[in-house]
Image 1 (spheres, rainbow, N blue to C red):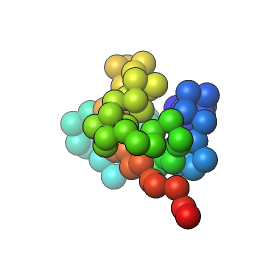
Image 2 (cartoon, helix red, strand yellow):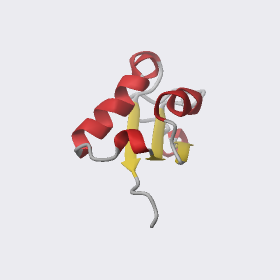
Image 3 (tube, rainbow, N blue to C red):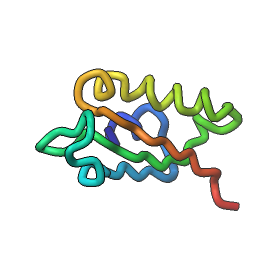
Image 4 (cartoon, rainbow, N blue to C red):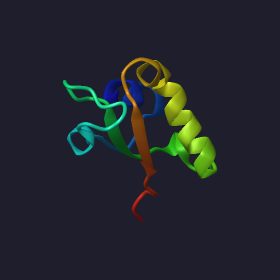
Length: 82
């Protein structure tokens, strides 16, 4: 996921955090993990977009993962420092 986001959005900040261990036994949880993620991102490609459109853009980049493996994705778009 990080590689796809790097290529598509050239972020200045990117954290892809696997939070699957917090969801063990819940719906969508997988025994091998990698089902629940949090993404923190700062990118000029997301600047000026509404929160909904920022999330849509990230979801478009990760459409394949969301269709096949990822059950839940939390997205935090962080404003650039300064």
